[in-house]
Amino acid sequence: MPSPTARSDSRLVLFDLDGTLVDSGPGIRASIRHATTAVGLPEPTPEQLRDLIGPPFPAAFRDVLGVDVETAEVMMAAYRQHYGGGAMFDVEPYEGIPEALEDLAARGDVLAVTTSKPAGYAREIVEHLGLTALFAGGVHGAAHDGSVEGKAAVVGLALTQHANRHADGSMAGLVGDRHHDVEGARHHDLPCVGVSWGFGGRAELEAAGAVAVVDKPAEIAAALDDLG
Ligand SMILES: [Mg+2]
Image (cartoon, rainbow, N blue to C red):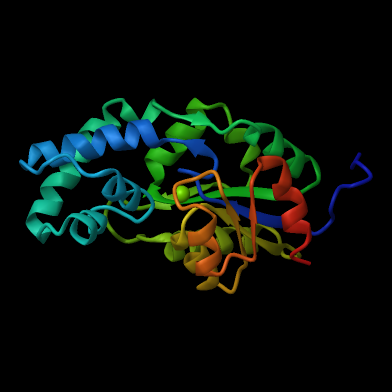
């Protein structure tokens, strides 16, 4: 029996993974350092490390570190070897995230993960954290073969799946921590609720056009309701 607050329209809520649901910084930074060492580059600065987390690799290696296409590919291979070899599990949900997700799911929202990291990694991480059952809308990510790359493409996958399963479904928006999330949502005319605890911060999210920026996971539900 539905609870008094359950929704009837299967509203879809999309979540970025790194920096939004999970603090994956330690594992990602360790794997980036492994990749720079592999091609003889100096250790990235804190600013470079911040800029490298969020946009898809290997383009981020080129844009942030100024390496050429070939070097970026070598770095990508080194990164994957290190990250897939164990660093990916050096991750924890932010405090209050599991409870916030459970609240939304209990109200009838359909939750999905949309990340620009490879879908296989994302599913393993979500499973490792015991959160898979909360994402009825799926865990979506990039394809290793390059056929799906970047936030807008991944969001498109999630929206198509939701539309196919829920004829009467509606779209709430995307919750994310970087300007890429705001831009990927806007590509599909979706609003983005920013989270200040991730890698981008409030100023970046507001400048990119986030409709709201929340400081605690418990504030996500109200921010989504305010979208109307
Ligand atoms: Mg993120």
